[in-house]
Image (cartoon, rainbow, N blue to C red; front, side, top):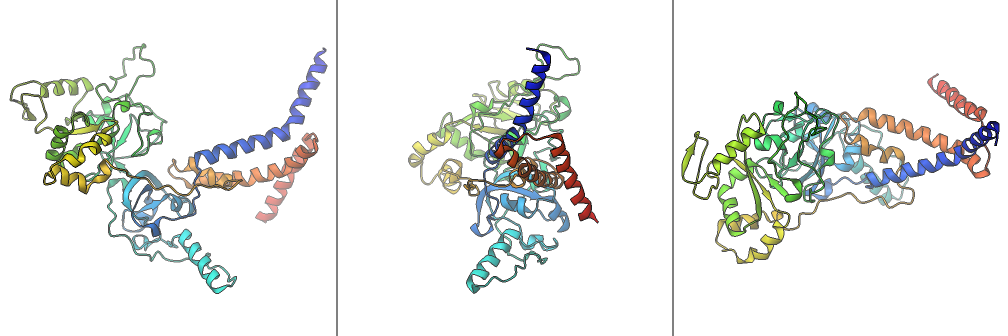
Length: 449
């Protein structure tokens, strides 16, 4: 076969497949987007009351309202706050969406757009009229705010005991959410800070959004990797630091409870450990101003020494090596819920442990997370709606969403342009494409004029 023949076949293949392949690739993108973000963002959770649900802190509305912390639900983060600076908090318990409430009273046009549309729809239905919608009018946020909501530093974008602003592009290590959260408000903690190791002593990795890789609270976190590892463990790097050894591997535990919450109920957790052996699979002491993980390990070993003795005024240990005065976090084993449930009724009903578990039954019983209804329509959302999955993890999101919307408009025009060629098996020529984009430019100029 001659070289000319080969070139002709290749050119023909490329030309005849262009339209069909493009449309098919767009369908694949739509399918992937639906899988990434399958929920319908058209239902605000405000009217459902207290829920354990995914939340976003709106820093923009907070700054407009005397730094009042404001948390909004999944749907409102897209429909009402997409142009605002948001921080993804993942789930919080017993929270009522703040969107459209008096906590946002100074936000211009702060009324919840989702609830506003629902109210107008009901009013039109009751009056059997097709009244003109007033959705274009700017309305203040006047709904009653929940008095039961609790807020912590997360709603201002700060996390962990180190109180750092979360920056996914600069974050190193892994973060774990406190499952109990009574004191800390279900805060997120760096693995290094749980141990007390200073951040500047640890290897920094950039460009990795750690929170995206974490399992949602209440879901087993075994898919995550806790250790900080060098890019190449066999290659010596003089400026690199030690790996974060001695931190429990995520596949070995189900939930984490921070040292702040443990300290508040220390006697209770010690009784829990005594009554239900192996429920607490690890206790990790936290030492302030620890410079390296090896130094942390040496101090931990001293705590485990037998006999009653003082250790640098930090703590004392008893004959079994158990922690007495030292701060520590606990890690609950993968099957801790079943172990507690199996013997819960055997507890002394007058004991503090029974009272504690009864008042905080979510710690070992079902604690469902609300999820918006799935979009079950045949076509799914538009690319603009679905594409916000990527934008949800960016700060700020406004430019990302604007880009997605611009792409969606262009995508629709290109698909409409290619479809007749694909249906009729016609070849798309260079002149066809040039003419198509020329028409778009001309329309754009007319609109600008």
